Image (tube, rainbow, N blue to C red; front, side, top):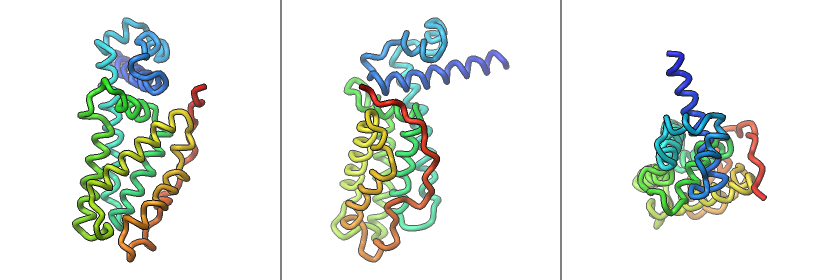
Length: 217
């Protein structure tokens, strides 16, 4: 049992170190020796757990998708307009990207042209947006003429863009930026009778500010 626990800790340390290095240097430039050094383990220990850099990247994305799924799974359980659930989820995603190295690293990996799109957190996020916005469209919770698929693509592009820009400037992951985006979008997205009910700031309190990595020079 002790050996299993030690192995699990080592594997998790490697995943977190890999995510940090991928976010900082990119997949192509990241080296396994840098990852093992950052995790505080030997190269042999790394290869015991992961056969290749691709295998490590797959593990980072898989774990990030699990964490993203927890964010999206909590949104539909909240009462209120469907668009408010989307707003809250985008704020929760930005909070998570600011605080969670694995999620941030996976979002960076998903922008790599050599990485597969299927199974990436970007794809999971877009599919969730499409599903909930399709329900909003069906229920009359989108303004007339607004299509769920177009809105989902727009929000995916915006949130992924914030994640990319946040790698160098953490303020892009703050609630002020996301609130400004919703202030711009909501008058065109929401039916007029719902506008006064929707909070662009989100309906949940801001978490304690995370420690951001220093921007790259």
